[in-house]
Length: 360
Image (tube, rainbow, N blue to C red; front, side, top):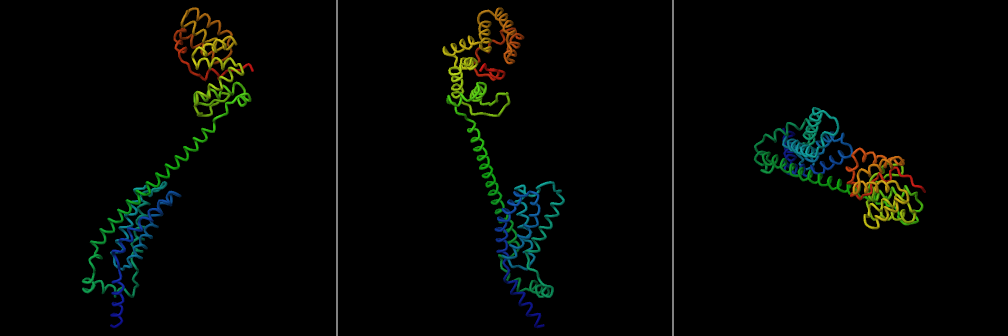
């Protein structure tokens, strides 16, 4: 009899040390780092995210156990509710279904995690102490001394509300962190691309241009003018820093220093003034076929279309450059006049250099 009384007194002292309110607060607090851990693991290996259903249950249970030091069933309910709120928050971050996982498996793993939360939230009562604890729980003395803050209708709503609130704050924080990292990554990627883009610039001094073939220099002039880079074989190499001034620098060098007739023709078309007209005439006199073709355009469109067509037919017999042949065929098929708008299009077209073979 005395042994039973001592066992009851020992059980009563242990039960008095229970702190269900501390357990609720602790479970809500520890839900935040557990969610952060979940997000970190999911980021490293999405397929492992489902394992956090169990791990989070164990961790929540331990948090409730450490802070509450409880023996009653209410502590198991605290653990289950806190675990549910953590899982609900993880669901908002899409951290449950990483990979091809069946929904029934997820539900099963969640149940295991919830059981872990229940199991670890309460301190186990040894078999020989069960009778003493049951006696205390059923005693009027214990029920009368039980504090209001430890009542289930206070603790359970509190742990639910706080866990959802801390979960919401964690979800928002994780989303903001991910967005900031994504922005940093995009900015770094953009800066890298911009640096690579800027590195495509070439020196356009006379010494550098003199070391290039005329065709290669023309391709860089077109790249600067259009923002698209084609090599000498016509293969596309992506975007290029657009700078019409640098394009004209290259063309002026080729026209003046190298006396290249195609560069004279292109530059004349671009600048479209008295100097440009002089360059077009100079290119035609030097034998440039495109310059001659545009002279025929000018004559046929502005003076005599019928005679212009005859000039075009005669000119076609002496042309070998494919781009010019294509132009002539298109003009002839459109009865000449339909192509006269080309005279007003003062741009650097790629066809001017695509099949061009400089004399030098």
